[in-house]
Length: 333
Ligand code: SF4
Image (cartoon, rainbow, N blue to C red; front, top):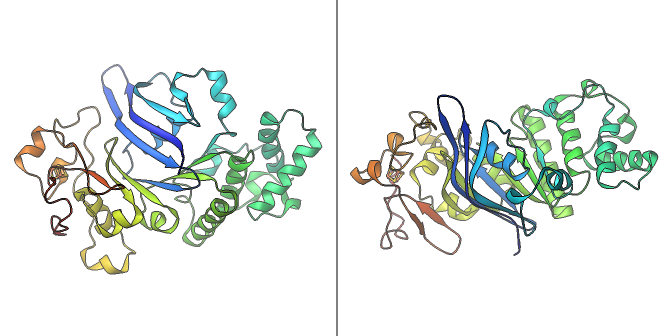
């Protein structure tokens, strides 16, 4: 399958007077056409920063992209100017944020907000035609078009997030980046919004990046998973690779802290400790201070990347060419 988005060796820093926070540290992501990639990890792992980088929306200052490439539809967006980036936002790539109110205008009816986005990329459309198209988008996300004249505060949380999704999809972007799109919603609404996103993926072939801390969501909607820790991908694979052949101790920790995966309930516990201070990252493996398996070398040397098959890799000193496929390394302590 063709790749619609390829991020390689992305490094992003936030520079303040007294510190340099390394939010993203050599991150690689590949999104294949028509697929959903789960980007999983705890808050502060650099997931949102990565999404913002793709849209050219890292606030500068204090944010600086120091290295890397972000190739979207064959073009490296990091080499492009503000005008080019405005042109691709909405059309080639859209982002849905966790809190719908950050992307909705409280004083504009929702259909006009959608129409505005549509007209940005289709300047020849008359206002009335754009409103018509906005009505279509509302229906697509399950909101009756005759509610289009209402304001955001007249909608429930779940409906607001649907409006946000309608705005994000209004110009049929090639890539949709959803940053914890259901975290602010209650459980039943969460399920509805996810169901709808799955449907959109199926119907329109939209390629998606689902940024989440929830492996349950990943299991439900994603084809591949990148597990991110301290701004790097520490394990990547297909759903099957990650769920059935977990390699990285951090990924195992994420599974163990999941409350709702029936077969793993007997080992339920949060990962001990906190993410390392991104302005003072450990010299070796960033997960070392929290890892149950840490060896001497882990504190001194960063682990390299090792592939266990064509689709699955890990960065961890537990593995070498010999044991990577033996399946007996993690004991699930
Ligand atoms: Fe744990 Fe070492 Fe692997 Fe890091 S490299 S995850 S510290 S075993």
